[in-house]
Length: 87
Image 1 (tube, one colour):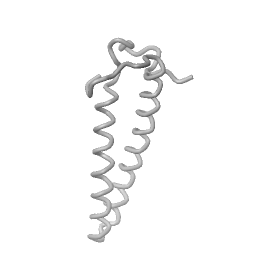
Image 2 (cartoon, rainbow, N blue to C red):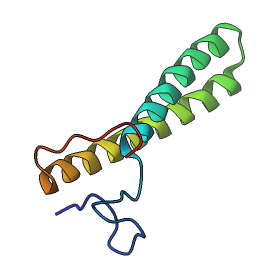
Image 3 (tube, one colour):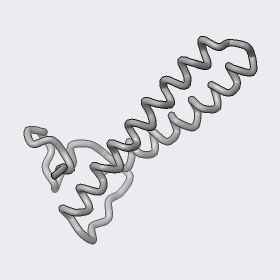
Image 4 (tube, rainbow, N blue to C red):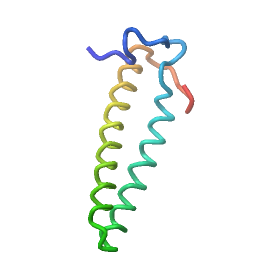
């Protein structure tokens, strides 16, 4: 069973280890911008730069998956609790 944060993390359920909602927004922004930059780089015949942007976009997708799994674990641990962007 996945927990919402690592066992030996400094945070607790009451005081989050990571601002998951903020990470979600930042990872989404990174994904959108890297896809846009990749398209622009490939159109400008800068294949190496486009490939680098695609790699960063894949990293953002992996981060989004991890964030969503941790948010789901947090929802299971704290049903009915709403979190702001910074918690």
